[in-house]
Image 1 (cartoon, rainbow, N blue to C red):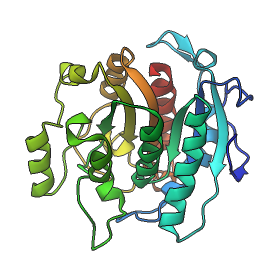
Image 2: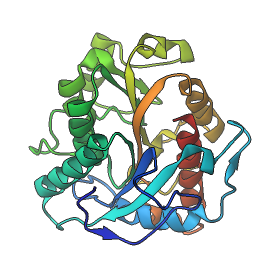
Image 3: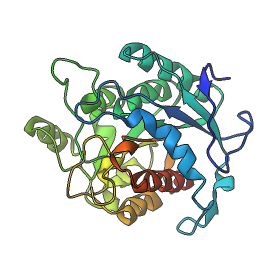
Length: 278
């Protein structure tokens, strides 16, 4: 069983039983290393509330959420101001999920939460690869002297799974050195078939919501113009449904920067559709 402690929030159409569920939704309300606009720690709670405004049925996948068989474990509670203890707490809880033969679906929170998820999953899943949706490369070694940063998360993950096992989609911002890293390791994808080399792998999908254009997703910590539409993102998910997805997360919604609530509604639908792909 999971360690917790948890706050009590539930996604609609979840399986109330942890033991009989295949996927465990885990809220990760942490934004301690955000470099521009903080507030993503409020996302998991707001997403849960917004989920009740969604239909359970996805016409794209022709599935209902009940078909996914996921359990919402709620939000982990973190020690404010302690990044390393937070990372450890995430890692331990995600390890528990895989010990129990289940998959994680993390809801951030900032993108650094992906690192302890990958640390945990890699202990139980061989041949692991990452499909990374984002506006930003996230390939720095450090940010202002701090290696534990959301802007360095994929670089740290590459040291676990290998740079050759990372594919990145939607990237349009980063330092020259990061773009050189992508070119060297051929991580950047432009078409669906660029992912085909991962068909024999076990895939972790991580979605930074700023991969979407700012006209669709203004409520994020580091908005970046020139992004994809919701349909374009969902088309990638539909292609990934034939891959072996062993875990996923959706991160970087900062709901208070979009008072209309539209960004939160979009984030919630992104989560629904990615669940369908799993």
